[in-house]
Amino acid sequence: MTEIDQGIQYMKEGKLEEAAQYFTDEIEKNPQDPVHYINFGNLLLHMKDYERAERFYQKATELDDNAATAYYGLGNCHFEQENFESAKEPFEKAISLGLEEADPYFMLGMTFLYDEQFKLSLPYLQRASELSPEDVDVQFQYGLALAQTQQLDYAKSTFNKVLALQKEHSDAHYNLGVIALYDENIEQALEHFNQALEIQPEHLLADNGKKQIEKMLEEE
Image 1 (cartoon, rainbow, N blue to C red):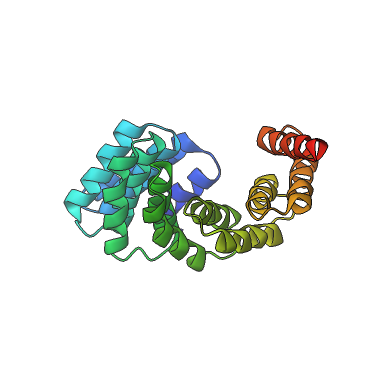
Image 2 (cartoon, rainbow, N blue to C red):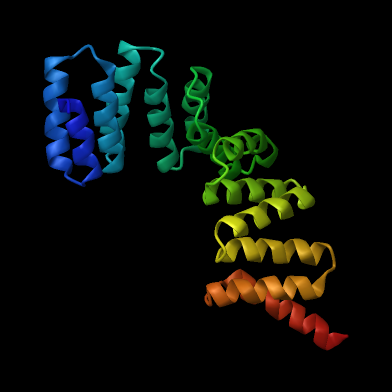
């Protein structure tokens, strides 16, 4: 195991001080290698030390303008601080440099989703869902984007896929309940709201939806 591999292993084990020392030593030995700066940036990001993490990622891009993972790290720095507009460019850069994994597509899609630019989020979340078909969170967020853009049939199919991956997903049931209401299928909506509440009794939105349906049925 190389020294840098050992540093990553320390991170996985939660031994952050040991990891920091390894990355520091590697940077001192090889100050022109961007990988060490990226790894240290990842450690600092994990510790929510965003300002220092950003400096390490920036240094990596100065050493190698094609360091896609450094731009991905920069995007995460901005995203975690809810600077969604600032996060878009580095995520886009990471993708343009060939980081063909679900994560950058997903995170770029999420920046648009949180910025309420739902249509712009769709192609990135769709690509992430294709690259990571078994990832529950990816599939769920893609379903939300589809619902927000009124593509309800596709959203319904995606939320059902979420439930196939994770049977007890209260938010998927809640959203299927909302779609059923749009389709005027009251019984199905009530069933989904009940299932959401069975999984998560404090699910306020599902509880509100259930009460609205019960009130509608009483007034009939």
